[in-house]
Image (cartoon, rainbow, N blue to C red; front, side, top):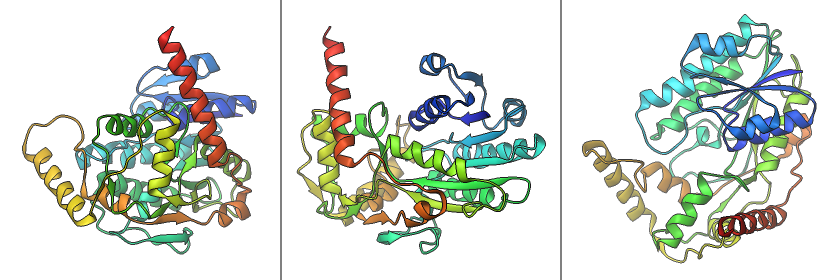
Length: 337
């Protein structure tokens, strides 16, 4: 089958492209940049921006299914920049599906669309956990709008599904793990609260597997069509435990210091104000939304995903950490040669 992956050059995107190629599909990736790793997989790379309707329409020409994985992520930036990529870009993908009679769309969403200030979630499903309200982070706010529009587009001509993987990690991650390790080595990493709040995470291969399982079951009228699903390893652990396990796997020191939530929230608000008023570069080290996320219990029930499209995590956290250690050790050896 001819499949288009948006954002195929990213962490999850490359895993999706690799897995689709291994499954015998003809894969193209729509990216803003060019990625040698995709060339090595034999993936056709199409350059463009999601906000460019004509570019998206052309990229989707001749495709039979789309994995819409691309998005503007992060904790900081103008609402407009997030809206253009995440909402407008998704509308362009949906329009391309209709124009080219593409029958299947697998959309990568996020649990952040259900975020509520310090509201714990223990074993929740998409049926029991409502959408968030008054979301402070433009990433979460725009992904919420996009997810709703993807699910509303489901029908006899186009089957859609939204997957919400929680905190994806593993070898090849260039975002979460490097930042954690850098801050840990610099002595700037803190837990918000006591670190005892339990959270879900998702090993990269499991996140990709959930997309493949959903894709194989997705069709007009299928049990999973038009629905959203939380995705994780199904092994919730205290924040302190999982963060320190990840740090240990990449040879970084553990985090031992903590910041009370009220103080972290106040620091986040101050950082947001400073980054808004002053010409400061990059993202603030802490925001109110991030403080809330770090201090709150969030873990989910995988039963709906298992029931409707057969998702069962194949790689445990312990096995994933072993793979991460091996990959990090191999990278360290290469860097010394």
